[in-house]
Image (cartoon, rainbow, N blue to C red; front, side):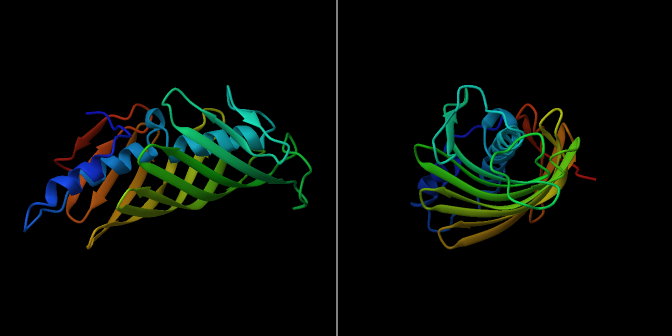
Length: 215
């Protein structure tokens, strides 16, 4: 099964609305989280990769920038992305422009499609090396579903992929509150844990499955 950016959570809420005793939609929540982080589906990983490109003085393919330094555009997924990246040098002084001398960057990320909107605030350190630790907070809104994630992830700057780290997501679905943990074990494997439910995700392909055994 492949993670998608469809409104799985919203569909679940609609299905549960007529049920007096709705079951917690663990599988749908996990798959939506998977689509939030998997590279083919856009989301946090794609936004971070774009932010790194901009911090290095580049521009994601097909994107444009304004006189205020707001970068925007779309990828093949059809999602609209918008970024503001502020760069600092080795002396921690603000740089006039991002480029080869960037060592740290603060990135404001926004990406949206009909029925959903995501925002993030990230700090990326070690931009001038081959790996960068990114720490940040993101907020996601799927109509009546609200989620926020606290993340610390390790980026491979040569391949623009996540190779380690964790995310913790707090999710509100009507009166139901859930906490999910996402652990990036290697480039092609992350595990998602919600209560006693476990899931596997390949962040590079979006392949998603329910785990029969996590450890």
